[in-house]
Amino acid sequence: MLIEPRAGDSLALNPVGRIFYAFSTSVCVPASLNQEVGAALGAQAGEKRLAEIMRAAGFSRFRRAAETPFNMVLEARP
Image 1 (cartoon, one colour):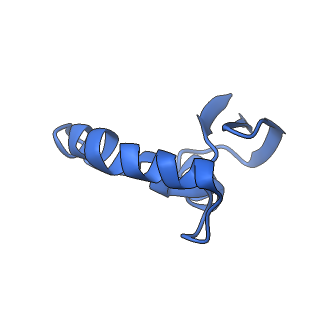
Image 2 (cartoon, rainbow, N blue to C red; image 1 turned 120 degrees about the horizontal axis):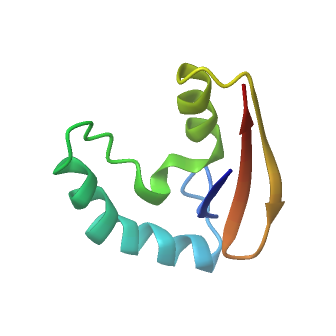
């Protein structure tokens, strides 16, 4: 299970998504770039990119299990 910001797959965002993108760009992305993997996804990943990463990691089933105006709960299964 992943709980991620509901920022969206594109830049056509709601006001909450805009806040997540701004925060992510200034805090999450630089922190990720400082780590070994350095994917720098932050809130910019979106559900589509996260599904690609989960499938590459060996999970064959991936879906959005729940959502709120602020977050999405994603389920990944082998």
